[in-house]
Length: 218
Image 1 (cartoon, rainbow, N blue to C red):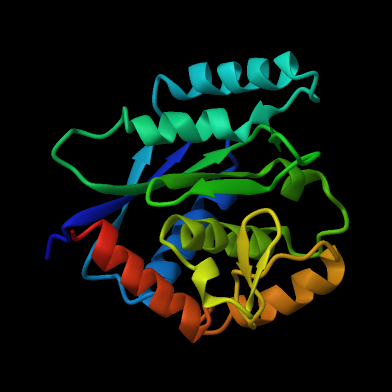
Image 2 (image 1 turned 90 degrees about the vertical axis):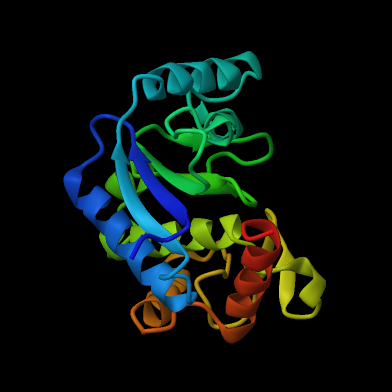
């Protein structure tokens, strides 16, 4: 059965195959958990001629702001928003994997970032290099699910008391949409829920279902 929308997986050349495999597995698990398998199919697109160009532009953007030599994630996500790899008759969103370290305006670095209804970028850079991460592949999978959640409207700030606005809206329930800076403890907590059949809390699932019907299926 052909689903009406696609979730495209793209990657920068040189991304380690085990991270690509982890990302694809995470996207399949996420769409199942969110109840979207009949609406949003995971499609492997691959690399694209313009990806290195946009990464170079993102590095220059960081340098122009006197930031570290990182790829500015907002610039990369603008390329995703342009959907230059996708034919005009296809609809959906995308996740892109990059090797470069990612930066943004107000953070020293970010593991990833997403734009609502558009897609997100996630980086393998810190997972390969940060020795505080005990299970880099496992935590990377949760990051992919996390950024997809942001793309699809999870952790809607209108929910109120169980949402914290730290680097964007995040869920305070036992859910992959959490955000904390105590990395070792956070890794243990988030992997515990990510390895279950339902990595998103019931409220985040409802957020996504409501957003998907109103945005994609409108």
